[in-house]
Image (cartoon, rainbow, N blue to C red; front, side):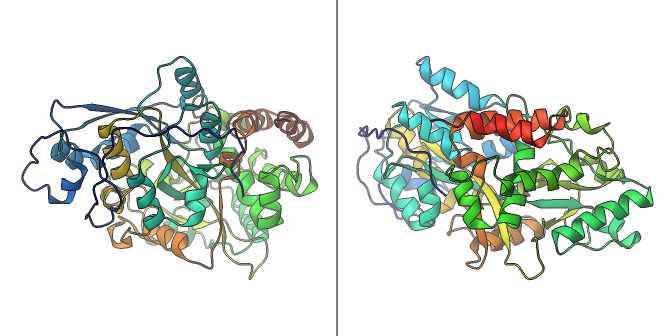
Length: 450
């Protein structure tokens, strides 16, 4: 894998004093304090400083709805103890609007980038500031070299990882499977056989799906393709695809499109609870799995973070209302291979309060606080898996920490933004609407920057 190469821009960070942090899971340089007094019970946050005048740090990202509420909850104590107010704005138009705001001179203080390729393009435009040493020190301590690489452009570190997700989960009802004699498949061929069996039984459609996500519509379909490429073609081919050494029109990639298309473009297999094949594009990814709870569909493909979308009171467990199994390998005995995603926090501006927030978000303290709330995981090595709220979250953390797992970051997130967060998404929407694989892959490939 590689991050898109862009022009190197180094902008020094001003106004951050070097003070050693003594926090558990937080090392490096703390921001300068503006002289306030810390509230009682704030020992864990004392090294971030205390600020008078209630300075505000604005953060912009793609995280919305329930997950946005949980994100705001994760820094409540930090705000109380430091005197900094964090104002978060989530948008499904982030990928477009962050460019508009940056180019228009109205960027946020910090942005949570879900695509390293988009981050790299912002660095190339001269918009992103290199962070304080405290941020990089946290990343060196708490994250692997691969994760640091995703926030690094042309050898310069710009953005710290935040959350992580394991993609490729297939959500299902354990009770429904048990009642109907279905077993979790161990190969892609077995998944195909199971899909046909459920359809033939005629009780429910095998699959429900939703690709609608505002201006980012289509991304859940790219996850399907990426999971399949990694399993069928292997990690080396996957890496070459990300770097454009293997084209979208290559047989190894079109084979993955055809495998997924045999499921998602088959009206006998989708889209339970919503409509025909094309309803996949009008169904939000947040709603896509809900028919499983009504026994209207048997399976839905989505990442570990989908756990936050289940209604309150839903039991996520092997014996619960819903659970997930990983998309199986192509062949029995193949090593576990997973794709994953995550976010990088980059700064458009510099100040002591921005440094304090960026340092906190890169710490194990924040990771444990956020995972304890539920719904997400992190690849932060200082994270205690016991803080995860469900068996699936614990399993996901173990997968990320297992050195035997073949892990690859989401391919579209690593590709140039013109492809990964533009034509690939649009191509998937056109594909679901009826375009054939050759037309779609030729279109996507034509947009790769020269």
